[in-house]
Length: 242
Image 1 (cartoon, one colour):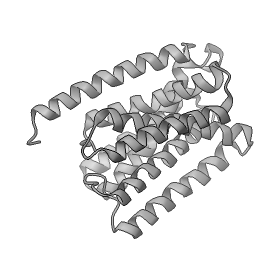
Image 2 (tube, rainbow, N blue to C red; image 1 turned 30 degrees about the vertical axis):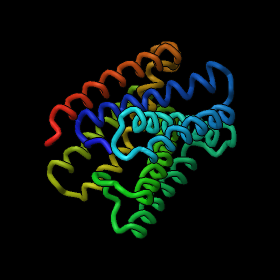
Image 3 (tube, rainbow, N blue to C red; image 1 turned 45 degrees about the horizontal axis):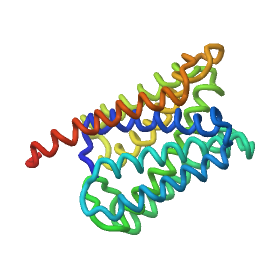
């Protein structure tokens, strides 16, 4: 696993934004639909996860490819649940939040902790990626609810989630709550932040967006991610004692 630093969270937000624009590009722009797009992204997720699990040490390409895969799967799966199945944002958000909490509780009961800074066995890594997959699906539904159902809009929704992440950061520096709990709180919140940022970039002007192309936006975000990951990984290798 990578070190959880400020750079980690910046890349994570880029990954969640890419998941939103990339997921919508496949399901909407290319008109493949939510179900077909979900199956395609699940296939990509399975391939990347197999490579990640097989790796004996941290490999940035495999790790972040799996994260992006979970965000794209989360985007199309959440949209399928909310829109195609008609459950709505509130029902989907509550159900997925409960699933995240249950997964974490089972993880803790099964292994004794939900630490993410030292994962070296298959069981902990399985719970780790399962929690990420569910939390990124939750984030899409939650982001859509705050941005549309509450009337805040995509920019307003992004500001709300950014403020909540700031609150988590304050709790972290003041050491008020468990580091593991705060990590997962931040991890969940970065997904709806990325979702609202992605929609801000790609939605039409009439809906409060910038009307940028989904495919073009996805390519630009992917390039930014690659540069950030490469620079961070190079610095980490240059200072192994850290």
